[in-house]
Length: 259
View: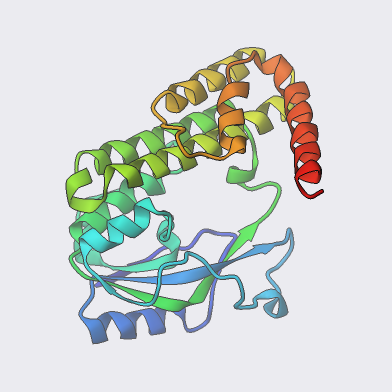
């Protein structure tokens, strides 16, 4: 066909998602239609009454965008990477395929496709529902998944960094690095807590986190982000205790400031 859409096996489109997206694509002469999504936490079926339209994301506003504006919104996380909240002109894909055998394979594909498009239309309503469940790939903490996530981040940063003057500012790139560092640190902390015997893997993940952290400018950052970088310097076995101490200190500091 002339249009492509993707849907993960445990998610759901609204019944009119493709028709609405296609109509908008034709009306605006766009090559991609991006629509919003809603997270639903459930292990069972997606019941219709649970599919409310509040708190939809990403936060980009409705309208028609050119390539540079889309990438600026992508760096500022007003657009999400996954391919399943967009429909595409099939001509954009050509011979492009997802990398096999890795998690977060959307990163390479989405960045390449958005870079080919000249006109993208954004709808202001959720047309796909993203299921969050305990057994999903992204909910399971493992060294390989975190390594794949880091590789995806590195690919994205390399692509954007080579076009920084065209798509975004150096300040925007630093904001993006801080968000990626925070995400990797949280994944690292979750892995240490969930896999206390996997010491070698925890050390390898810590190395990834530190490598990313060294590229980050922590000027004008909040206490939490600075603390994450400080805590990542300690051995993994001490991380659970240090995190508890930090949470207690932060709670005490907040209560003290309210007096």
